[in-house]
Every structure is written in C-alpha cells, then in structure tokens.
Image 1 (cartoon, rainbow, N blue to C red):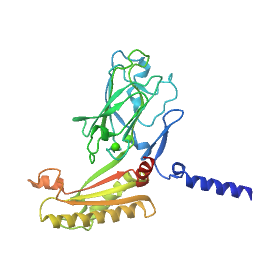
Image 2 (cartoon, helix red, strand yellow):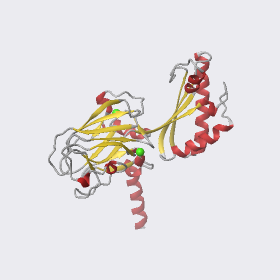
Image 3 (cartoon, helix red, strand yellow):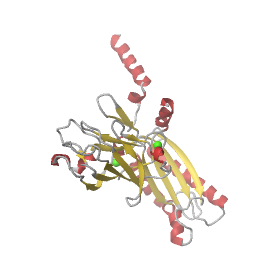
Image 4 (cartoon, rainbow, N blue to C red):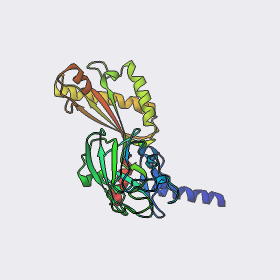
Length: 316
Ligand SMILES: [Ca+2]
Ligand SMILES: [Ca+2]
C-alpha cells in the first residue's frame, strides 16, 4: 500500500505547485543562491547573436572579453570561469534576437543576467531594426529586470535588438564594467507575417493550395514553444468598403486558425485569439499595387500563455 500513497501524494503535490506542474517550454532560471526567474517561452528567449561589441576603457582581464559569452541560456558557474562577458568601463554590447523577438507586455519584459562580485549599473536600449534606438531602462545593483512600461515603450511593437552600455560605476575591478552572462526576454514572442496572396485568392477566404505548405512550415516554427497564446491578425488593402474588408479579414483569420489548430493538434496547449482589422491598419499607403500587396497580410504572433499573465496578476 505504501508506495501507492507516496505516489498519490507526489501527484497532488505536483498538481498544487504551478511551477512544477507547468507543462511546456517555459523554464525557471537560477539568478543566485536564493532566487530564480521564470521565462514563459523558455530557451528561445535569449539573445542569439552579437551585432557589435565595443570594449570599455579600462578594460577587464582579457579572458573576460569573449562577447559570445553573453548569448543563449545563462551558464555562469563562478567568477574565475570566464563564462560571461565583462563590458569594461563604459563598454557596449549590441545583441540580436533571431528565433524570437520581445514586446512590452504586462509585467517585466527583460532580464539581464549580471554576475560577478559587484553588480554594475548599465543602460539598456532597444530597437526594432538595429538602426533606430529607444531607451528601455536601467539595471543596477540587485535590479536586473526591466519593465519597458517604466520607459513608456509602446506596446504592440516587436523588438529584435538590444544594447547594453556600462555606466562607469565600477571601473577598477578585474572584470571592469557590467558582467553579463545572458540576456533574456521575459516577454518573448515569435512573430510571423505571411503575404495574404500566398494563402488566399482575391476576395476569397478559403485557403488555396499554396497555403498548406506555408502553414505547415509555420506550424513547425510555432512548435518550438509548446504552450502559448497564438494571436492571428488579418489585414486587407483598401479595395472595397471598410465593412467588406473587415468581414473578409475575419473569415480569413478563422480559416487560418482552423488549419493551424489542425496542424498543431487539438489537444495541444495553445489558446487562439483572432483580431480582424480589415483595411484599418495599413503598413504602407495603399497607393500602388505593390504597396497594396504589402498591406494584404496575416500576422501570427506566439505570445506567453494566458496562465502566465494570470499568475502575474495574482502576485500583485
Ligand atoms: Ca533567442
Ligand atoms: Ca512590461
């Protein structure tokens, strides 16, 4: 009898504990001996590539200057192992996100895994295209998370670039400047835009032959995350009345949802949400056939799951 009881007890414990019971890609990452941080889209949430690294002056010991060390999941062990990047006094690193982007959504949006004996202050800027930058926030001793709302960063925009600049507070140590092990997007997203012409014939909402292959490969991308909210937004050009276009984009959203749901499996842990916009949100002016084609599109965004955001509300 005993093993059964133990088994049932464990099962109940797992059910009662939201983090352990959480099935899905979301993952806890240790920050220090006492604390961890939860990234709802897990492993893909981290910066993927170095765009530029400008070592500060004075610099740290050379072994701490491999910029690749601030990419991907955190792996800091202890100070003597150079598995992190020291920026040097006033140094800057610019990273790109390739298999994910990030947004200003409810709660904290970014977490900079700063390590080492002293926690140095650093400025964080973000960009959609790597060209135009806006201020995102600041990290300083003990505070390494950033809520982009504090810097009035607009919602509904996906960012793909982030720049960290050391603020010259601690310039004399062996690892002068901020020491960065990893750069994670808490509110990580995957955004995919499909030209509507690939999916539908003119004025139709039934998927055409070429749509199946496209949606099939897109589903594989979505499956990197096994629990999420999938938002489907439909847009048209301005041919036809507002109402007609709104109805058309709504029917098209439903066609896309039906197909993706079938591909991902009805039992999968995804929630679906649709937002038909008709012609109300053009990307470019509807003044040439090419521009109209750009505006006819379906946007699919994979967002952290609902229960993650509900959990945040409960905490507050
Ligand atoms: Ca990534
Ligand atoms: Ca936020």
